[in-house]
Structures are given as C-alpha cells and as structure tokens.
Image 1 (cartoon, helix red, strand yellow):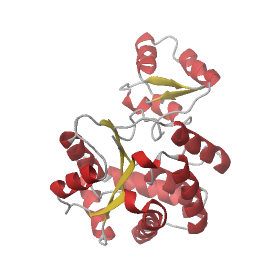
Image 2: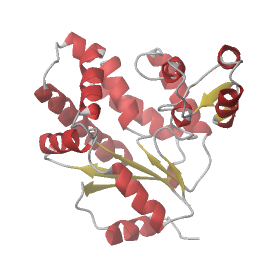
Image 3: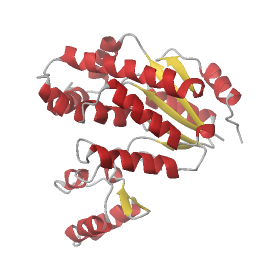
Image 4: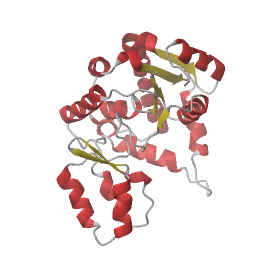
Length: 273
C-alpha cells in the first residue's frame, strides 16, 4: 500500500480530488488540514507537556471543554498535538489561544521548523494514507513568505525531506493550472458567506500582506498575490521534476479523469483491499 499526497495551489480542487480518491479506495486513511496527521501539523498544536498542562489548567473550570481537548489530543513522543479547530466552542479566545502553539507563521526558527518536519517524516512508517496539503502548501508558504528562502534553498530543503521519507511508499498527485488569476477570482466568490463577504480572500490577503515577505515588498494588491502563487507553482513543479520525478503525476486542475488517476495509482503500487 502507498501513501498519496495531494497538492496544488489554493482553489485547484485538492479537497474534491481527495474525496474522490477516498471513495474509490475506502481503505485509505484520509488526512485533511486540521485532522491529526503523522506528518503534517497545520491547524494543530505542537506543545510540550508543560504547555499542554498549562492549557488544561487555564480551562480547569470547564469540564466539558477539558474533555473535548483530551478527546482531540494525540501524544507523540514528548509533544502534545491538539486538533483544536475540531473543537466547537463559543469560549471567547479559545482558538486564538491554542493557535499560538502551531509551528507555522514564524512561530519557530527555520532550524526548529526543519527539525520538526524532517523528524516526523523520517519516523513515519505507516502506509495507506491520503494527505491533503501535507507535502507542499503549508511548508512552502512558510519558507517563501516567512523565511524568504531562495528557490535553490527550498529545493535543497526538499531534497533533504525526500531523502527522509520511505520513497517506495510515496506518490504525489499535483493539480496544475495556467489560469491562476481566474482560479483565485472564482474562489473569492465561492468562499464567501451568505452576505457575500469574501472571508477566504480577506484572510488570505491579510496572511500574505502581513507576512515578512509581504511587508518587505510592500505587497497590498491582488496582482501581487497572483504573482506569488505563480512563483509558488513554478517552484512546486521544479520540486516534482527535479526531485520526486516518476513518483508524481501532474494533473490539469478540475479537468482530470478519475479512471486515468485510478489506473496510474494502481500501476504505481496502490492496491485495493
């Protein structure tokens, strides 16, 4: 059994493809952003024992919330991973409080971030997972926007990372489009609330413009976000072509054929049970 990683820019249809693969291969364990994953930590904490106990103490009077925290916590070595966005609560500031224990958005040094990522990937020996955004999106946004690494530095990082994984179990499906601006404009509208407020776009622009890269380059415009995504896609394609090679399949976003994807997965070692 293989592990499948699904990547591509925002709006390319990663979640839809993940769902289709999980329906075609129901034996696979699906890891979406915010779920517990043995390799990715987006929307999850990475806490020491002291930090975790401190949070439990902070909410000690709220027994139901403490139970929810415990139910959504995984102890991994000496660290506590809380899938806190899975916890539904109206407690003011709860999610913001837990957010400070994530590894992204400049909360770790580059060395710390790399050690965490390489350690978790190198220790991961499981198979039968399909993971969304675990290999490129969150890591690359951090390396590009927060650490402002060059393309060559990022490629060197991915060579180290790819050397750390069990490549015999690794498959990557990458959704590509040469119509990035159109795609972003579509999801601006699709990811709006009932009143038409473009919540995703506002959050994405705030994340982009307030990042060290955005601040250093004075980014404020939609066109600059599109340029960033275009750069990221070119870099992701280089990672595929120069590092991952035959273990990856590049697909036209929203125009792929599930039968062809199934055939490719089966030819490359995925088996239905």
